[in-house]
Image 1 (cartoon, rainbow, N blue to C red):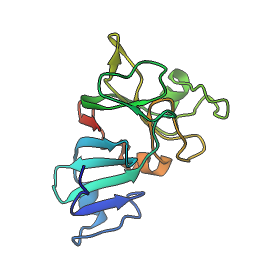
Image 2: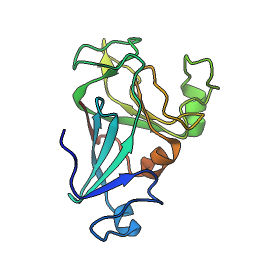
Image 3: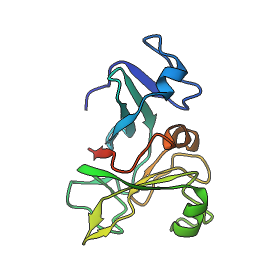
Amino acid sequence: MTEPIGYKLKGNIENPFLSNNLTIKEIESKEIIKIVVNVETKKIFFITDAPEIILEFPIEIGKKGFSKEGEGFDGDEKTPKNKSCCVQFIRKPKEICEAVFTQDERDPPICLGPCFICFDIKYKNKLRGIGIHGSSYNELRVTSGCIRMYNDDILSIREKIKKGIPVEIS
């Protein structure tokens, strides 16, 4: 993946580095049309409907790195490469607390931070539960295969993410 051109966001949307004389209001009005994850550089890009605006954030991935497309399986602790998945559903804090738990003993039950954005990546015809989430400790620690963002970062884009948005993990 080449370095994106134009606008880049390096952190919370309330504190962006602005180029091209864009205002925060102009940025917030743009729709996210694609999510691109680069597991090797550990960056996530939210592509908007305006080519000059690409939101960029640091991420962390699975404890054991990443798997090649089609080779991942449940419990492998790798972030799976996938060029044709999409957002399946979005869970917010109360739903996360009731439905999603972690294997990490340091984390309390609400381990995934303020949001969980699940992708439709399957293994043996069942959702793997791979997606984007934050952390109880608001830090970038390795995961069991998901993509972790800082809580402020995921909150700044959460309302812009819709079911069906294409996702590329490469």
